[in-house]
Image 1: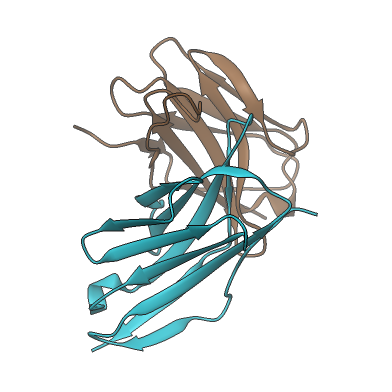
Image 2: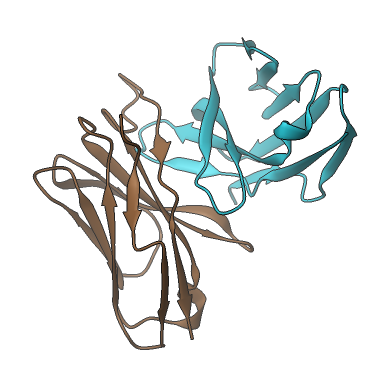
Length: 112
Length: 117
């Protein structure tokens, strides 16, 4: 069956450290992979998109890697700040299919 | 530029009733997608509308339906509500939707929190 897996346990991290989140998928062939941030009571906010032929993408303190062989994406927040505390969702954009398939998200708590 | 708006923000219904939720996309956006978010299942795709046509549909029963108007505003309807329909319903708009040829970022609204009693 098709799955997108993110760690269900919250990641607690000290301010200033790098937070690393993992997104694993099975039985999907995504064209793109995206990461979103969601705060309580709000809709997701788009952060980064990486294409299947790209290995790495950066945006300010954020970095995403995409390994289609391992079927895995890593999401890094460097120099984390308390304002980075949120739930982060990975989503796949699928070939031939106008939809996003989301993981359930991974909560990050940055401790001052 | 105003963001995606959804109304109402909160809704309480009883089993067997029906409900209509509304989504106004960002001005100029022609695609509206709807998602259901629950703690157990996460975000699940319901359907996408582009220029008043449903382009894709997720794996939800026929009780879930939607439509899009000529001004790109969209509504989704859930008939014969069940307890399991309690969820956050999110809509997202984008210029061209999820077509791979010209992918565009999706912008999500704040959602409508539906509680079915």
